[in-house]
Image (cartoon, rainbow, N blue to C red; front, side, top):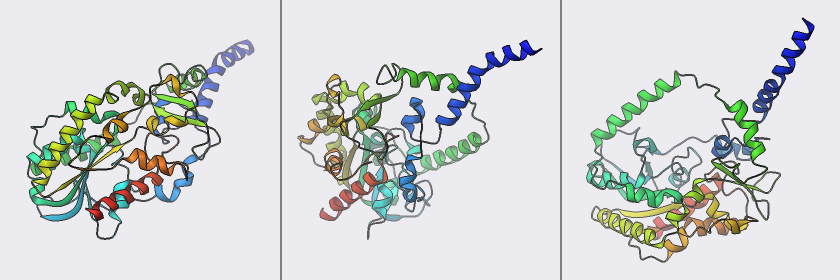
Length: 348
């Protein structure tokens, strides 16, 4: 009996240790880069943004207003997860500016903000909801890919929006009733962190971890975490011809919006890899991102926010422009971008 207990204990010990390691250092409620990359989580980095992260949305969402009643806003903003940030997102800080009101086109209503903008133009929403400006935001790595996949003839109507809202609310009720299984992370999490010792993205992870020349975040290391797609999509985004095609499409969109007396503001969000590229110690083994360089020199009929230039300048004075553990802007960047948007709106 004693030998059986000893053997059972020895057999079970590795699983117990792996489970304990995962329990202590893996978290599902931290930044997306740590979560999808199975990166060790130590400390409570986000506590420095505690006040901002506890804020809630104060602006109006398309999903919450009465779409049968005419209303006027300064801005309608459409975008991806950068626009979807709750409470501490740029749209919320912009809405708090004096005499500026913001309406947010919920992210769940579209997977492609560029296509959604054309679809709204083809529908009746802008006949009921009046706006002076439309902010089109897209993360750098997907902007051109969204352009080539956009179906410009699609139409979004008030009735179709109501249907999508109902379907979304019903799906939320369904998923809240389901338990998410623990999965295979007990093995994958420790293994992935061993692999990071030998390769920047652990050979197959969605998250890269590289060293930087200086500490850029409020953590006790010089690591930079970024998404694998930031590199995977460089071939497409570095092609100057693709920038020309995207710009032509945006100029066409601007022209169509001006026919409704709406000014277009284009807000590309830099990939984290792009913004911090010059700070990476061994960056020569990766291509230099050229999206913003190519895009800057093109003739535009719309209002353009060069967020990379703006945020890079602010990096000289403060850390944590992006979250250390995430692909997205921190509240500091959101405030900076909101201030720039305010300048554009007030000057035009």
